[in-house]
Length: 197
Image (cartoon, rainbow, N blue to C red; front, side, top):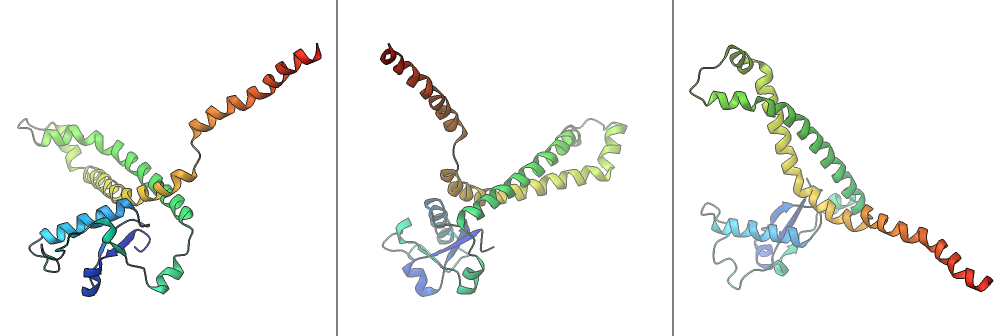
């Protein structure tokens, strides 16, 4: 959990021992925005008595947020370089995406049957057999679980991509550079021809 969440507090909240936790690994504009949204949600929630409309009389901005550092024991266990963690997160996303695609291919075949269940038309013998087959609910549950897992991890993977993208060369850019490199020798030969004459 410590690898996929970051905690924020403010000077006012720190005195009360309160903080907000949002998905993410590093302090960024994205996570600070999420933290502000969470604080606003808690202020608007009548059942949450920890914050109210008067909690920040002078206003609150992203710059007012303070990162809550993890305990020393937790930090010592989490000394993995940021870019290594980012690569692992992208690999996890790839696995979740493939699982989702496979589950979707099975579930989408059941859509006509599901639509038939809401119709006033009688079910065919084939549809009745398919609806009572254990694979019907099994396939739908597998799809739902795969989608939920993918969607839940997506914000973490996006944070990882924000770290990895600047360090990873763009293939299109590399292709644009290669033709220039191959043309240089030919240009040099052409320039030497007048000198030899």
